[in-house]
Image 1 (spheres, rainbow, N blue to C red):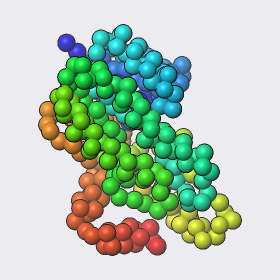
Image 2: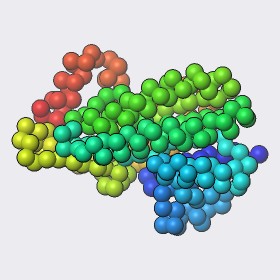
Image 3: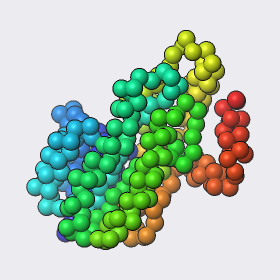
Image 4: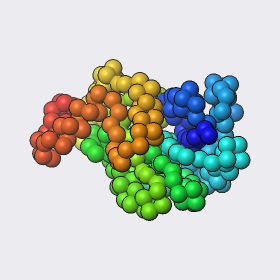
Length: 271
């Protein structure tokens, strides 16, 4: 019997590559996105259901789940992938934008997970894979909101794993580094207030560094392959790192104390 994965944020990048990879491996795929009417590639593939799901819209979450169950009968893996990065000085963000960042990356993830948990509990199995980031274990300048959400995903995932183990489930975390997706485009929300002079050096440094960092980015397919590994390896493993840059940075984070590691980040950014 074919297994089924439900993916949030499947319209592009990691989500779309993961949908295509799992489909090619013989899985059923529930590929969810905010605007499914704009999707043309995934709709042409067999055993893929493209359906609307906005993690900020609770009704759409339950409708997508129900449509997936109706189509494929059950769900074996949930991939919480939808999200974006808000960067910039904290003072430059409106409260509305701060709330949206946490609602999308954290509350939305919780809402989708909570919608699927009864199904997993009834089946006494199920794997939840949450897309975190190396940014859930370390930080870069001007990312207090984004890193805050990813640190939250790490804590939620690690603690939730105790719960789902009680019925035979698992939670796994995938931590990519810089990925060659449209993250710096529509998934990157940069805010600044040029009238606050004290932060403008940091702003200039970050915006200058981004193109260079992107040159070493891994393709989204790399993350998709790690997600497939996490879904199928049968291991009792919580965290998976994706991308050579991520492996190096995570190794350094574990090796050095805060002062040394943060000093290295400052040096890298010329601060």
